[in-house]
Amino acid sequence: MPFLSDEIKTLWFQNATDVHGYQCDFYPGVKSDKVWSEEEYLPLCHVPYMPKGWADEGGMAVGSFGGLLGDGVLDCSETYATSYGAVHPASCAFFGIMYVIYFSLLFTWFRASRGRRKTKNAPHPPYSVTEKFYVGALVVCIAGVFSAIDIGAAAGRLPNWLYSAILGVQGSGVNVILVLMVTNWIAIMTARGRDTSMLPWVQRTYNVGIVGSIVDFLCTSIEEFTAPEIDGAYNGTVNGVKHAFLGLLEGYFCVLGLVYALKMKSQMSSGQQVNEKQKEQVKKIVGYAYVVGGAGSVGVLFRFSRTMLRLGVVVYPAPSCSVVGFIMGALVELVVLLVVTCVVVAQRPSKQKKVKPHGETMMTTAVSNETSTE
Image (cartoon, rainbow, N blue to C red; front, top):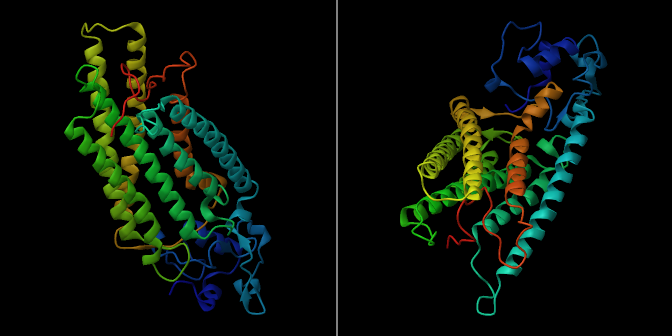
């Protein structure tokens, strides 16, 4: 039974406080001493709607819950976004504007980089590492613009399955950026003279990471279609397996990146002949490695916590009960935007070299010029 029946609603809910308590605390009202777990929650209305005025207890009818039924039909006319007030449209505008700005910058830099590297003998040179960063971030930006149409699918402008697919694209794009960053650090560390091409094992690690990153998109896209006939519900087992796999993948690359960044720092401080600029670049790489390691640790813990909570259950959608809850629900969007911001800051073109293709920036290399990972 994907929805609560009108009979149960009338029995459990005497007033707005009961409805709010059930929705936010999983407590089904004064007529029952049963406290539901989150996994047992069933929505009151079709997603993304709720009984009108549910979030404002004083705005809902007092007395029998049946008083909220007009002509025997529950008034499910208020969207989740309406309950959030101005926070939802403001969030959509903020994310949309930021992604448009970042897309414009990255696309301009990408075209300029391709133009500088073209020659008569090589009109279509292989993508450099920096250009791959641009492409990955551009894909994330395009998906981000679409997700900003309706953050959380809370206003009904986007169906949940489409919003989930968009989030899958963003998640896959972020993981691709992580794989590019870490494998390029390793390529620099294992470079043989001026040859910074990847060693076979690094290339295999790169390939596995790229393919593994696509799992986020695939699983996030299909998990809703394996759940009951209610928009927004998803199969917790599929979701849990996805989080477990991605937790292992992201944890592996975060540890790998941190180990090699520290190894690079150790080599630079062991008396190796390097100039001050190279030392500064290595210092920045290590700084990024710390950020990746710290953020990655939190992300991995989040992944495995989701796995433990969702295996074997069906997760039904429910609106956040506060502005803080909505912001926490948009945490994935915030993390994705932060990653794109890092790419924009780290991969901006050098202003000092206009003729010669600029070297890889601090996120990708410390000692080499443009390199290809083909």
